[in-house]
Image 1 (tube, rainbow, N blue to C red):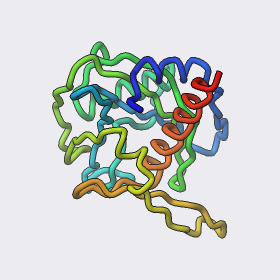
Image 2: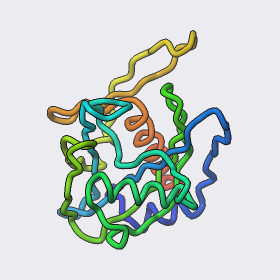
Image 3: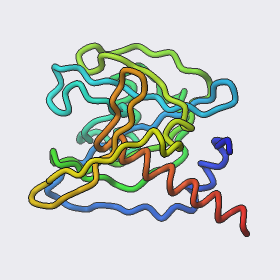
Image 4: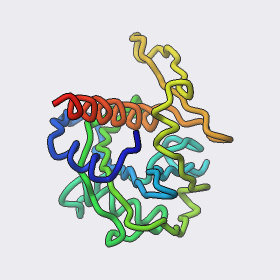
Length: 195
């Protein structure tokens, strides 16, 4: 089944997201930018440089830590996205927010889902981003592309998900956010069909 921006908008309008209010974590916002190519939704991902403070070389969504000027976490995600990959706020149609994610590195990340009205062009901030690429959402919906490993985190075993797309290893919080989002979305679409 092909997922449309309208499906995602309707899903997020009814989604009861889980918030994390721990003051011990740094609030951060990331953008999950979606655009349509050849009738299918793709998600934009970045590879971080080896010079950034956290998550060096990892695949991530554009975004970063909330600063004092940001009145909302959506503003954070949009500002950081423009700084990192040159995507202007007026090219972005925000569809909604997903569950907060806590990272072992001490961040509380709020994913903001957005639809881009056209196939985007980017301007990379080379201090933070080494590459930008996109992946069809259908790739993440195919369980054959998913790998899970058990990792020990502070004495507790947790599932860590991995996706290998060409030369890119997508894992950790980025993989977990995508997996959770798409599983919840597909469950909502299935329930909608049976009503």
